[in-house]
Image 1 (cartoon, rainbow, N blue to C red):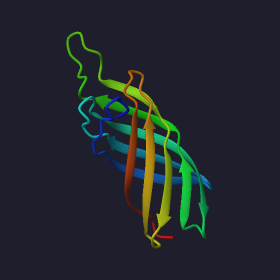
Image 2 (tube, rainbow, N blue to C red):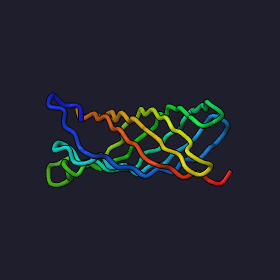
Image 3 (cartoon, one colour):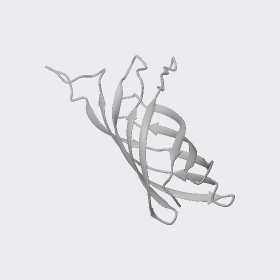
Image 4 (tube, rainbow, N blue to C red):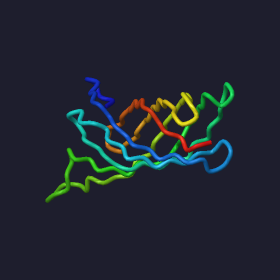
Length: 133
């Protein structure tokens, strides 16, 4: 969380990625930003990723601008309260390395740009499984 005190928490995500065209992937992700005292956002993100591969297609880089539909549980709806659901733009960057024909490891940096002064930087690292070549 980008605040004066640098709020932090563990974030989690599950992503489905599909190649749409050469050098263009699409993703749908379930994202949980953790619980950094100020917010508790969960939601679905969609992105289009221009990607390029290097080193005999073993390393891939991409940037995937998209949108993030989230619920902020720290700001619940109620009498006189605003709706906790919102849509925010995402600006992520990713790098992945192919470990084998079926397995990769991916690192992703997401920048969530909110409209209520609660922007967040989310760093994710994890394994991925590829379809058979």
